[in-house]
Amino acid sequence: MRTRFAPSPTGFMHLGNLRTALYTYLLAKKNGGSFVLRIEDTDRERFVSGATETIYNTLRYCGLDWDEGPDKGGKFGPYVQSERQGLYKKYAEQLVANGGAYRCFCTTERMNELHRQQKANGIALSYDRHCRDLTADETAKLLEEGAPYVIRQKVPLEGTTTFKDEIYGEITVPNADLDDQILLKSDGMPTYNFANVIDDHLMEITHVVRGCEYLSSAPKYELLYKSFGWTPPVYIHVQQIMRDETHKLSKRDGDAYFEDFLKKGYLAEVIINYIALLGWSPGGENEIFSLLELIEAFDISGLSKSPAIFDEVKMRAINGIYIRTLTPEEFQGYAEPVVREASRKAAAECVDFDVLCKALQPRTEILNDIIELVDFIDETLPYDAEWFVNKKMKTTKESSLIALKTSLPYLEQMDKNNFTLERVQAQLSKAIAELNVKNGSVLWPIRLALSGKMSTPGGGAELCAIVGKAQAIKRIEQAILKLEEAIQKDD
Image (cartoon, rainbow, N blue to C red):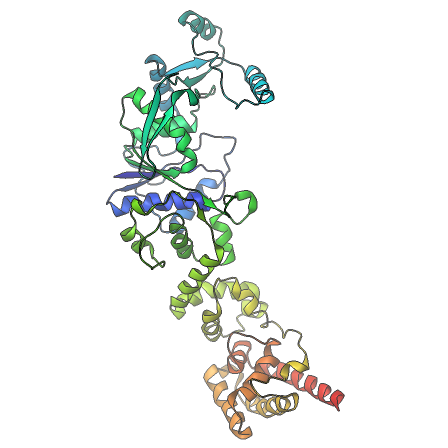
């Protein structure tokens, strides 16, 4: 088995394209075959500089390594269509010679006028086959005059064409519904619909996975293969990814690209796991798969004819499951760069990352959640003295003031260079014992004083270790003043 992923270098990787690459990769690896990467850059108007490198980087980042490709070579190269240009003219001329194609000399002006008239009459835009029946003498005369031309496919005017798809079965289309598509443009560049047929044959591709939007082109591919006397590959047309019941996941709507979700803080493994499930059912209840597990489980019989609805809430939940299963060291590797970017103090390494990341991990679904969770590190957020009144913790402003004043000396006694979580906990335990209260009666006021937040990654002791001795003492002193002023006003 030989499969191929043949993207166009037109920008970032759309999730739909990435899913096609994934299914193509899984199919090859499940069956011990080769996964080929081919860059289809014949549309120079849409070409984006650097997009080829983006394709490489995205596939590698997702673990979809290819066996043959532009950077790796192989016996069927080159693997970039623009580097294969000489091949296509040869095969287009072969089709003209055997009656499967013809030269079309229609000018741009004539085509524009034809399409204007068709549009005015409510007719679908198509070519009227004006040059299809030019005589050999007429063609020779135009060639002698140097008239530019394209080469068009000569589709039979009668009968039907049948092709088979692994998901949709046999599909039969009246030939009268097919247009004489351009195969070779006037500049000698092939169209996508021609080049991919030639390349798939020459590269001995056995199975082609592509979007169902290419179903309408499949009969014309079938006719091309028949004209050459070649055996077509096995086709697997997958349904589109939809934003909702009526709208496909569109680049224009944003959040359609792999990079969009990486920037939001999704793990690449999760994106791959989730998009695999968009249009494919593994059977059973399990929805969490590593790439190796996907290879083992993948079977084209699980592919659906129905469009798949993209549900970011579900992908977010899967991301949370992945994050909770990471080792502390793995999570810190992901989280620390986010924290450093979000906080000046963290960037200056004034933060205990071990303690912080241990507290962040159970509270993080996507990595960008961290940004809001650590917004207290640089400075305490504005808060009201009334927040110290907590029925669950059974704290009042007065009891909170006592707790802070009692705790402060225990923290001041500590060495700033050994202000670890374990030592902070030991010191605060002394304050709790002195007051003979429950832990929350002391740790809640400290948490609020240090963060200005009702919910934080970690409790009072963790926050002390995270912000360090100087900040812990400064913020507790500020909270003491705030409480004293509030109590005085109450009186």
